[in-house]
Amino acid sequence: MPHQCVRCGKLYPAGCKELLEGCGCGGRFFFFVKEEAVDTAKEVTKNLSKKEKEQIEKDVLDIVGEEHSDKPIVLDFESIRVNSPGKYDLDLVAMFKGKPLVYKLDDGKYVVDIVSTFERRDS
Amino acid sequence: MLKKLKKFLMGITKIFGKKKEIKLGLYGPPNAGKTSLANRVCKDWLGEEIEMGSASAIPHETREIQIRDQIKIKKKGKELSFNLVDTPGIATKIDYEDFLKFKMNKKDAKERAKQATKGVIDAIKWLDDMDAVVVVLDSTVNPYSQVNITIIGNLAARDIPVLIVGNKIDLKKSDIKKIESAFPQYKVVGVSATKGKNVDKFYDALLKVVK
Image 1: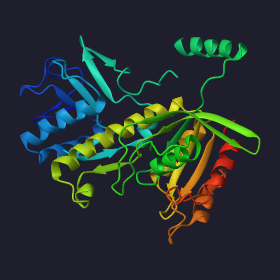
Image 2: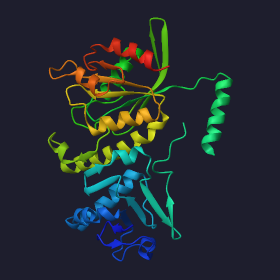
Image 3: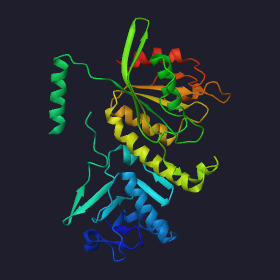
Image 4: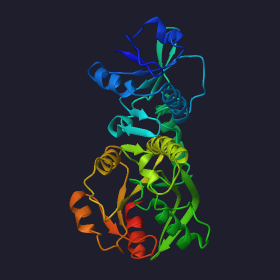
């Protein structure tokens, strides 16, 4: 599955080193994109300015309740689509299914970050 | 494993008779009147003028979960105690430009959109905590929407008791029958939360649905 750098829009295949170390442009934030959605992903980020992309990075981190860290973060492109700052499309069906929103990469493995995303809360 | 342990502990709690607090959630699309209904419940049963949250004509006014503990409804010898959870409106699209119409500046509108998106995530996260849910719909709006169907479908899948409230019956365009035919398997009560119209019927239905 490809991943797209939010900042520069470059696409990377799963498991490549940039996802662990960050993109060549300095971005450490990636959209997780399904093969069939690659074209849409390209389209969405194509027209955004650098400032807008940085704003999206900040906003999304805020939304998912993540601290800014040096570790690359991958956003599931299917659940929330950020079209530009302040414009969001939400896939409720995926969200209600408890599909994780953010995957953190650690030591070359995917870690599903259930704590800050869609863990079924203990009541 | 954790779930099994939780179930086991809950079983013990039940055996020893400690009643857990019922969480009653108010869910629905933005601007349906969830907060207005919460405020009405607080006013009617807590006897106070303190409101649960501020209601507004601008969508996504509630962007954080609000909880009011220990509300007790007593009617016709029946009693129901619960914690009322008011949730942010659930939407499939949140666009800051929609807020600009309300004379909000661009920066504030974008911030509101971001908070509203976070609010949707929180509302969905909390759903599993609910013991019963009142789905609040605007009865002047077509009920056949993806948001309504997704919320109600997910509640059914989770076996959470549901009561549907069609709000804003004081408005001309209100159509409760349409909500009833959209969701025939549920009890639908028409109210006007701000005017207090028909809320008695809402409390009666609530006592029947939440056990």
